[in-house]
Length: 365
Ligand code: COI
Image (cartoon, rainbow, N blue to C red; front, side, top):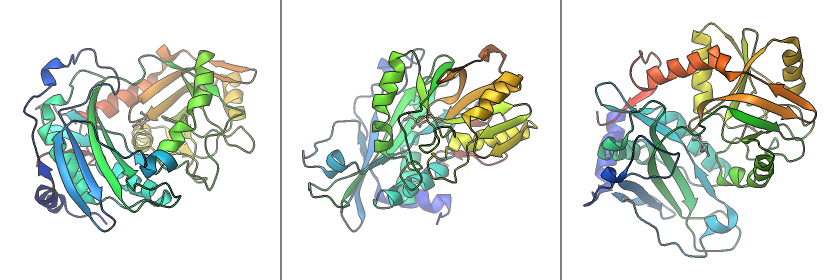
């Protein structure tokens, strides 16, 4: 249950100790050449769940942790995370894009992984205090933003297999450029599978990413950027890319795989893009979509665009899509719909367009 923003903020201020860095590293950062996820802001947030309550919440200078080799997360993978972005409006005020959606999703992931719930004062309130403190780290160059990474890991020092009783919640933030610098090539995977119904595919669990490393490495050796995962039964219904959800524009309809099987992450960018597409007059359908349907539309000349959406990736144009003998080649320089989605979304996120859906969380107010 979500409570009033000022109450959350008050609670955060009461319960989170703030220790500021004496030596900011801000001057060392080249904001014109930001890669994704390589540089971290001056501060991080750490809090401990001791089996009964969240305590020791602190924002402190970014530093390494000391962790026991018997840490349960390392052995059995109780580890979940979120990705969120912060921007500045034209007056320089920091804003976080839809943090409540990520807050809810983290707790959904926590439930599925048998982990403890994170309270709103710690997640949303913690983000607010951190971004307020590290506001000068928010890049303003086009395509750049401050990428926020809240995460939680098991903290028990125990190698018996059972849900951990203690947990650590943390937030680290990274000024980042685009995740992909150019249109991408996707391999539709027909052998390896990312998620099955009843599994953990809908959760933002670290293991979901770990399991994709080997097949993705193989795909990269063949020149692809990512894998487009399909269902494990018929190997033809699209799921997601692992770091992104996927959209196909066929005629005047935008189609994205539905969430009913529990195999796909419910992307916050996915939901934002669906709304923006509707604003643009497209019909949006969340439903099963097969690679055969994509192939048929491609052959009929009605497949207009394919793109991925994600917090890190934003909107990533797909220019190649291969499945067995099928080769789809798209000219992404002609993607007018994807380009308009990016324009509209960026304008909202940076306060240059009306935020009619109240997606932006204003920091420090
Ligand atoms: C995100 O888009 O935030 C993700 O988590 C994808 C990836 C960087 C792991």
